[in-house]
Length: 399
Image (cartoon, rainbow, N blue to C red):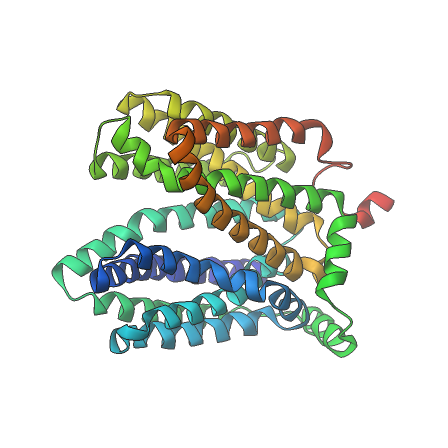
């Protein structure tokens, strides 16, 4: 009963926080653009959002592993509620505030990803991750629309006030999650020994074939996905001959596919092995990205991006589940923080390389190359990624 109650509060916290984050994200982009109308400022803002994970990533993993994840989430929500609330009063310091918010979010996101295995059994992780993903995708569709309505009918400041309120509600939801005595004793023991280091975490990850290879593949996918996100709108304008409305339609159908796939995975495909959904998602993702730039028909482009959303959801959910199922609890924080570091580094590299390469080789060539990179990773994963079945821990393999 407690477990079900904890999951409800955990998911509710995420839903409330996600919708506020999307409202805030649109408001921040609008605010920064309206200040100077400078593309340089917009790029700088993106860097401010990614930089903290690279700077503090190693430190974050250790903190999350030896302290109460619940307390980190509560403190993270409270600090971000204050920081978001003050943005309208200190607009000239918006970049510094965003840097501070992003820094706190690294702790929060790592703790949240690491906390779920403490709330449910390993066999339930994929189902809960599917449910979580469906809500996240839904908020990705609803949030920007709400932000648009608020900005157009009221003042932009209200977006920040609403986001601040969602953080406080999320904090209450997390507070309602009950920790078991066993978990509390385990944290206290780790905190007393304090022998946890990021280097030791790297050694563990390197020795864990499943975790190591999933991180490598995720980094490769990040390189290709960064180029796709940066160049997709250019391809829509130049080759599909449509504007922002067409671009919005494509993203909406992709988001809808992710919602539906997450729900289907939660309801009907919970018994499908996680490695199957991982490989299918990875190969399908590579295939859909590869064929998308070869097409110039808008209707077909919408269909391809719908399929891309399906495979994206399969890959994202199974990737997270694999990491949670196959990583020892005391290394979860460092594993997820390293994943964030690698993902953000690959995003920065791909954003820079994608624009530069597109000028030399063309948008279409770069997008096809990114898709092929993911497709090859998927094909390699079929035979080389796993030395033992997904979901089997080192302990169970010894038995």
